[in-house]
Length: 131
Length: 177
Image 1 (cartoon, chains in turn yellow, cyan):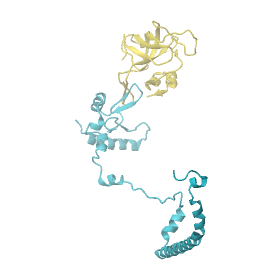
Image 2 (cartoon, helix red, strand yellow):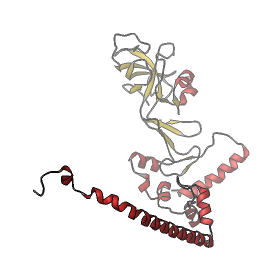
Image 3 (cartoon, chains in turn brown, purple):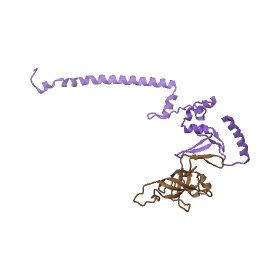
Image 4 (tube, one colour):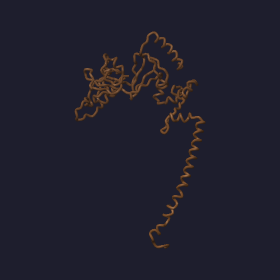
């Protein structure tokens, strides 16, 4: 249940560490709560310090950037079709660009398997573990 | 409030009847991470911790106790506790646990297995024989030694008296001072 002002950890290697939700992009409503697999607009609150070298995993975002992201883990339980409820220990997201493509190249951490059902197969395939 | 074990027994019957008709791979019965109870599909919750460890809870009771960081080993109705205190296990199962170590005969550096076996299998008669033979041998050797000694002793005597002269006398020094 991510809404305005909700903070999420960023688990890809785009360079951001913490993002704050600004808007939840759902088809019919603009406000409301975001869950796993929902796209949100967010502000980068904390990012990894940018160094002088241009390496492959150089941070692509800076603090204060407004980006899009997809929620991959929530503390609020999500219901699976078999009736089970899954909840994680934190809220996490993966940054995207405007074309629904990932900004980072790698994901570090567990992601929810509900992503596959919402159409984020690319993220699921990159994740080291899917629960 | 449904009683834990009987409620699950009913679920068991229901599940087996369902499964017998249409086998599906997803219907796996999990076990609760706290109490060890069986979790049937559509029951309970799953919690994924920050270190990516998965915990399954059958009821909110189990979940609450886990989050309070209670030790299941101290909670009397959990499977962990019952197993630790050996509750409800029949005597037969408990006895099977004791194992007997089989002793193997091993050879030592000085005597290999064959030598040990040979020694052990010698009968008393043979040993007595060996003993008498050894005694006789020892006696004979002793006799021979004594004879040898007597022969050589007188021969040595004059030789031994010569060096009895003290060093001073040999050197021819001052006498007696």
